[in-house]
Length: 65
Image (cartoon, rainbow, N blue to C red; front, side, top):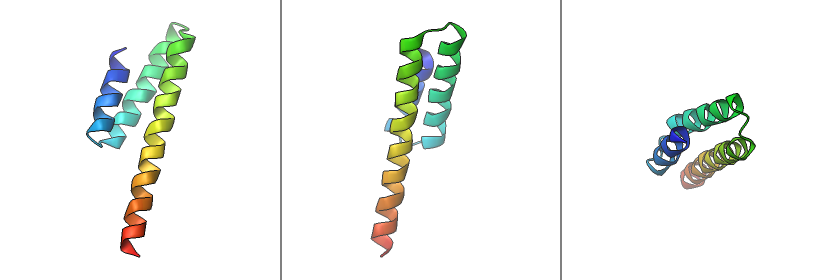
């Protein structure tokens, strides 16, 4: 799926908004064709992106203290 590739690439570049967009669009596309494995993969990708965002926020907060 092209959207998942987009999400992985954006995540690698730390463009988290774009990565979330890609994961969301991948899930939408997968739901349209009822591809359960792709839906799960897109949801896992979205969770991983959110975890990366939280980690980055925690690191910034710790470095400020």
